[in-house]
Length: 301
Length: 161
Ligand code: SF4
Ligand code: SF4
Ligand code: SF4
Image (cartoon, rainbow over all chains, first blue to last red; front, side, top):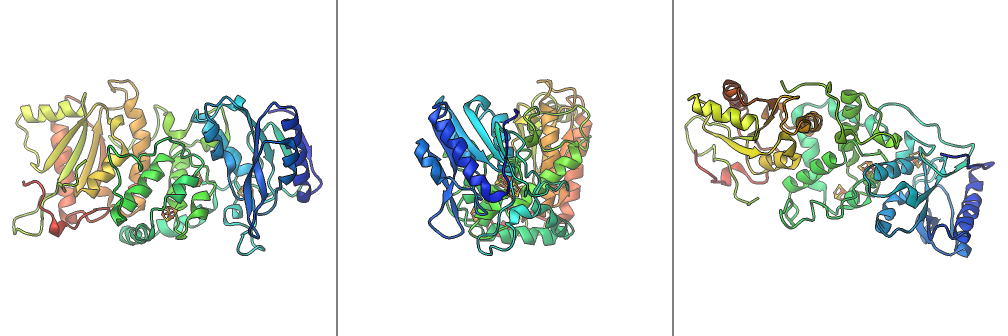
């Protein structure tokens, strides 16, 4: 990290600095693409923006509706050798760290412009904070080249678990085994397996997902509760230790299902079992399931 | 994987029902342990099926969920004791992964008695016998597994006992 920290007087000043930095970077031609947000065509929605010309940098904005975690777009530039600049909020920066840890993107290929985040608002009810921002774990980016520092930065919460879903967790945990089974059965029944939760997840980065594989076929094409259950449990295990608690999976679900609860259960278990902070907080560590300690808890003797 | 369900129909006969157990056995320890159990003529439930895997670390959590989907009533993942892995560290990864997996399964309502992870070395034939027997005895009162299952037990034939 370096000293490129730019102070802004309040959150409305963020967009202006974003345009300046992006314009400069494109003019210097050190990078060929800037990924940020622009005004969406619908009210209360901002959209991802892909800027290649310095004059287009004027389109960039940061407002209360910049939900999208842009880091996954970097995967499409993988192996191209081209440098990309990307805007990240606090939570997004963790998924960026996750992708670098997984060798999906090279740190030197990206220029990270962090925004210390003032928090987002619910798009359907603009006076309440967005669900994922109710409990923000990392409002200041953990990794950046430039940081736009805003005095209204959301206070980061250091309750374990790292996201809002853990408040729902005790309710489900305190149910009996059979009640829990019914609770999840219902969720699995309602899931239409649109894969939105997988597609949006910034740490789901496999080129060919096991759910799309033809040989072996892990999932049938039809919608069955059993296969939906398989999908959710496997997805939870695949991102275990890498989930950054960004809440995107739950935000995009068209059926409003508590998708993230499974991930959150695992994140909390990891903290309890292995006594490690989430791997995505620092580039110096590896993801939880990619390493071990000889004295990890032993339950299997 | 085929779509052929692997379990018995427990409802058709008046005989005592034996749960179907699938064991993922590491080639270097547990599989040798199971072999030793056989060579020593130790009796263990005949409804146990063993799949040999190169290392307990090869046992993808997907295999376990698939086994429950296809009608097994219990699953055992077994490998070398920590420190004894043929590949030096494979079972340490297994341990981390399955510490989480057991919690996840319980969280979605799977009875923890149906899913076990255990270290069984090549010389522990009697332990293999003991563990699969215990698992079978613990599952018997629970009845056939319905959770995560992709087919109703009453409509399947499957392999015979
Ligand atoms: S979770 Fe935190 S960093 Fe992410 S958008 Fe909300 S307030 Fe900003
Ligand atoms: S599983 Fe959900 S909360 Fe976790 S990183 Fe993926 S989208 Fe974010
Ligand atoms: S986004 Fe919702 S409906 Fe779509 S696959 Fe995920 S849980 Fe199912």
